[in-house]
Length: 380
Image (tube, rainbow, N blue to C red; front, side, top):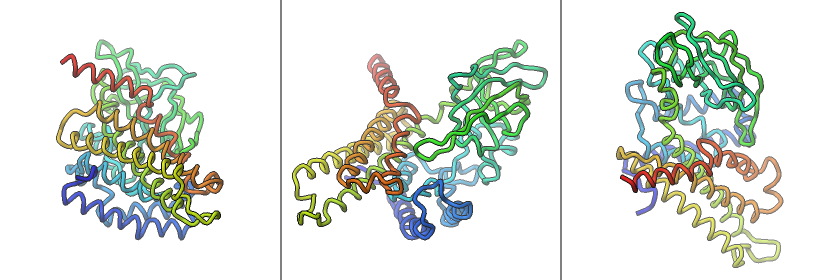
């Protein structure tokens, strides 16, 4: 059985998505002369989202009670891998977000924040990481409000967000609960300052924010005080599997590109594929792709069955992101000098994949997660 074998309905969905990417998205990118997402116009971005919505893809990951299809982990992994394997620069826009932590808000919060986000009227960013040079983010109660103060860094999408879902430590609460909490902070609230905008190698836009006594109504706390960190980390398994799926799809594209390159006539008159050293490099990439995909789909099937796969997701993310690094590197080595020119697709991938080994847990941290999870199971 292929490692990516799917139930019939998911397989059909994957084929439909592949057709949309190949027949519509990639040609649209070619007409626009687009090499990376950052260069896309607002109209082109809007067309990808609206066309995806028309074809029934955009809301697949959103929960049924909110009008989405509630696609499970296995289906999400398969579709995200398919998108990455297509090489489409705008592939990230095809699947809309599922609302993240806002799905767990009160009825009022869902009406004021979640639904506008799902409709695309508001954009939310997750402000989790405290800046190294700044104070830890804290909150103190003052009447019916909390004053949030601190500095956040690497807020993905923060500069263009309308809402900052901010993790802060509640230190004063008039006898009430203290501890970590998630505050829904409006980007334009008094006291919120974008102190720095950063663009990373993968083309992502991130922000560093200064929070100075930002007043947040009690009704804008997401969940219970004291449970902010668990709430913030509750979807880490799905996020890690998503990164692993993207890595596997990218590795597949790079491998296909490599095979096409080395099989072409070479200036020596013999295709590179006829050389044993090249064959060995291709063989190593095939092994990397196969192993990474096997681990990914094994974890996704278990997750889809309702099993706890925190350890397996960490393994899949670690294996896949390390594998894609090697596969893309070999592809560049076999392609030669053309691949290091900035507008070459392999050059773009080389920049994009570097952050995969850091996002949602570095490889080094994941090794500790895997060891601790394995020891806990061993000890019963």
